Length: 393
Ligand SMILES: C[S@@+](CC[C@H](N)C(=O)[O-])C[C@H]1O[C@@H](n2cnc3c(N)ncnc32)[C@H](O)[C@@H]1O
Image 1 (cartoon, rainbow, N blue to C red):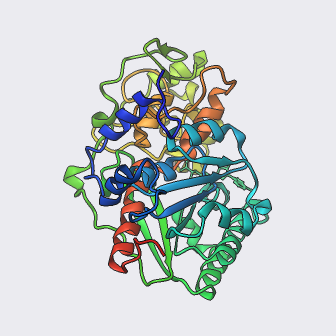
Image 2 (spheres, protein in one colour; image 1 turned 60 degrees about the vertical axis):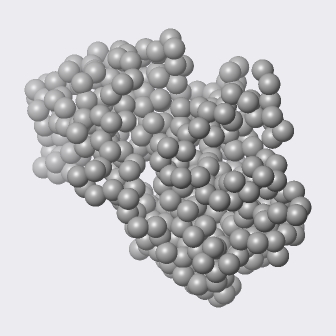
């Protein structure tokens, strides 16, 4: 196998470079090509440097990478992220909690010359609808650690992505106030992913903070009539059974279902859920008065709409609308990765690495869809161009 200067197999890089069908290649991606692989050579304009806090498997970073930013490093406590983050983004992984990352370390990674972009997608679970009632979740304060890192490293632009519900939380208000105190202009947008051609009905909050004024989000690229559907995204993948794997694609594998759950999914029509089941298949909670609030659990997706939001639990039938629209199974790891708009070449694990199915599902479900990350990156790029900051300082 031949590898190039950034240590990436040539075949992967070639495929990656080819996969720019959605959006034209930006000019400083060209600059990177002109100056070498990572835009760090002298004598040419330099691509903005990105450090990704809470980097996970690298969905957010990969969007920046594909938009020609110089992704320098990702920071995450979960060491299973190291291989996929480094392999797909040609950047370094720092396996640490944000609480133990020093400004000196981040400053060193940024270096002295490039425009600095600090991005982060703190764990969403404490802010999601399902966990709102848990008052003392330790993970809330990670957002304040992020604000602290911003104030100590003074990046030019910051971006943060999370669930929209975060806005009603006091920690978020503290986060925004801290950014403003550090001299940033903050802008927030709730993004509905299908508006940007993502085949998934995910809604996310995207926050920008810049030293140079308001960062505007790019305009929507798709009208409802043009939304990408589940069918557009996954209908060409091979049919597999519950518990099976496609021998030609190790990621196209799905969880096995017990006899009861098999009977349940067989009784569920496309787009339906447990309401159509025989009483003997229903759970106690379904039969209670408030049972209707569990409308989506055990649901099947629909071919003609964007999918439901992919969570870390997409491999379980009982945790959402994760049933395949016609095969009697939940969606596979590959299908979830496609719905998260990861390109086919994205490597999630090392061949011999011991990673569990649930571990992979967590990495994939936690990610920022790569296409959304590209929209975020492009919005920042346009802003930096407008304020004339894509230059060596
Ligand atoms: C929503 S995911 C980030 C997804 C990632 N941005 C992507 O696009 O693939 C949140 C990440 O925060 C990480 N995390 C949780 N606690 C952390 C901490 N104290 N320090 C650093 N990372 C942490 C988790 O391991 C998880 O990977």
